[in-house]
Image 1: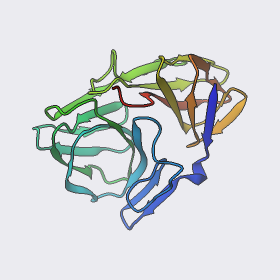
Image 2 (image 1 turned 45 degrees about the vertical axis):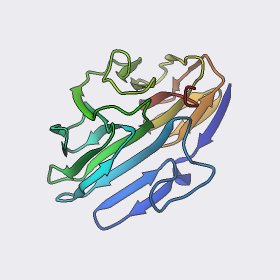
Image 3 (image 1 turned 180 degrees about the vertical axis):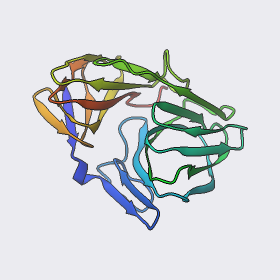
Image 4 (image 1 turned 45 degrees about the horizontal axis):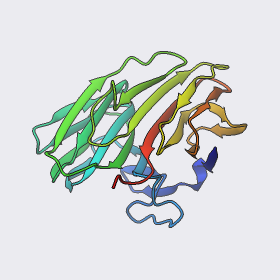
Length: 230
């Protein structure tokens, strides 16, 4: 098993009067040739948007976009007809397809904290939008995107775990895929390496690995192809 650790403080940053964003991979004005993505995972942004602010209507194509709200409420509207307010416990998956326009704004009087993740699409399709509430079981990695979760146009899956101290769920990875682990909060250990809040690890050449919670922790794991299919 190969494990590449990325510490929270080593992420890129965008800070404005209304947005505080941390970038796991090169994005916008942040460029790091060593962090251009992890396989087909291209963006993991950790955003805090101030009240009354947000991203006005803008365009995406050929990308699968997953949004997970951690605190507050985010209002989404797009040109496919998708519209909704995403709150904690809810997940949105949007296929940009051959082209989509959308906007995202803070829908509350408090900052909204969210993760937005982009994965390369498997092929050009019609744009689409899904949103779903998930009840996450304790001490297991629940699939929220792919398989039994929300559908995206890529052979990738997202797994969310709320782990009590001492829990040690085993996470499985299919051949040809890697797993990107992001610690939302808490502290965990993988292969004798400690990951604290907002640390991440890219794991390759592993069929499975154990995530041991050193204290109460919330963890996101993204299984993603490491290269495009021929």
